[in-house]
Length: 134
Length: 132
Image (cartoon, rainbow over the protein chains, first blue to last red):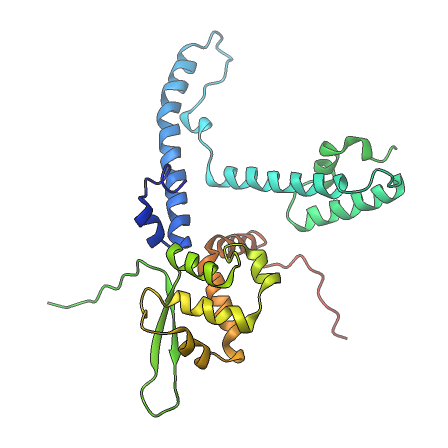
């Protein structure tokens, strides 16, 4: 990664610190955003001039480029997904439904504490068959 | 014309003031962890110090920390020997030293923690402890 993505020589790599490596990673993300924006200019122009109906929405180049907040939200969602899948997936096959529901409640509570909006809905989207029947 | 000093820091490091208690002025050690130094330390102690779990589980503070300090001195104080570090370090400062080293080795962790704290807007998700 250091050599290919950051263009560092072996000597350069050994001289940098983890913080510098992290900074290079952040700069790489910014570079990717600029590139994506450049492509998005073309994509949005093509799309907007090819609309067939007046009601078709217009798109803007920024619709194709994620903001920091969107990237963070995506990463957070991925982390929550792994957490929920692991919590239930690591239970033995013979686990009773009662126990699974108990784990479900605990996981939902933990998700809420960790900042997940609508934790119950999120959990049910991953394990829909564990949703208690009304 | 007014003069201003502009300070810049390229390599992230921290300093340790070593008082040998012999009446001489204290020495200042600058600790910095380049990947070169990290590799050297890992070779010495046989553990992966880039893995945060090593810091929570597998460390022997008496055996490993002095080598970690010695490795961090390779850039700015290469004259300091392993024996000298072993002589000077004492258990009292090991926690503070470990924390400072962790901050340099895992810069992303600190950032993530600060971001999370900001997101919580200063409010803790934990229930307040009863005091009465």
